Length: 353
Image 1 (cartoon, helix red, strand yellow):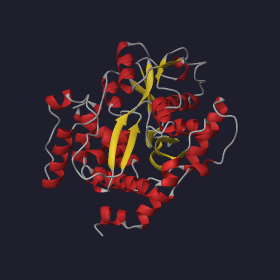
Image 2: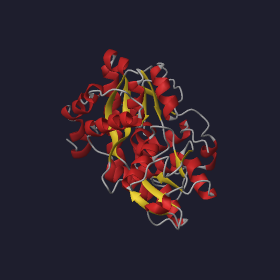
Image 3: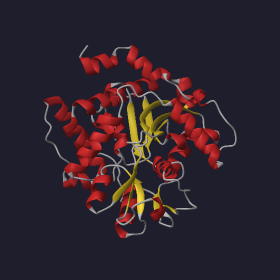
Image 4: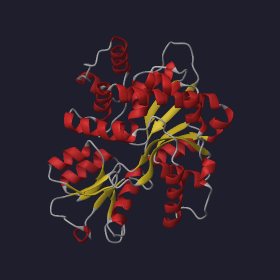
């Protein structure tokens, strides 16, 4: 199922809610039918510095960027942001070809792109652990039952594919050899494949964890509970932009930090944004999504996770995707988040100072 982004009507409704304190707006059927429009529309306002941003998955891990965009916080911080969705391959190809300046997606995919010569930097880490559960059909009780069972995975180096491999290795199984992996593009397509019995398990996050549990699927491995470090959702910026216009990057990071604060302060509003992007009205599933991604995983100070990125590079070497070690620290720019802290922005957002 295609999931394009919000239209002006939704943005206006959300911004109106913020202005008057209303928290009761919902997405109408007519708005849902307009999801085929672009996520950012041209306006007649004075021209602002532009920024082309893509995210790679329809997952609650992107609540920070969705919230920031829906509440028009990018414009508040002096940016005209165009927001769209592409898969990992397309996103990092677009970054390499100067078609976009920012990718919000898998840190492992970004490392693979850097190894292939794409100039990029990690400037923020939105989800620095693996939020996935490996869920399987009823009757699979232990690792031995998984042998020969098909699991659905995303594209190579996606956060979901990396999580599937990590879960199998935690169970003492070899991905691909002991357990066949069937590449299925999106989370929605993997969910449909699970329902249809095409695959018997997959690594999933809320809201799918809640919906699958109702269908009898059970959790074999919960990577988040295990504290599995992983650069699951990172903010990756073109090296050229960091070098030539760091002020635009700083404005983007400042806006994101305000979006994170808004998501934490206004759970009802955040859940409406999640409902819109994730195509579900299931309150229990939305509650679980908010609880995991906003309350538990989304940090007020989202520094890029150097250790998890080093581990990601090591995994790429083990898989044969990269040939040589690399000082991953050279790909990390922590000072944008630090500058937001030093400016007093977090104090104003959380303490009212």
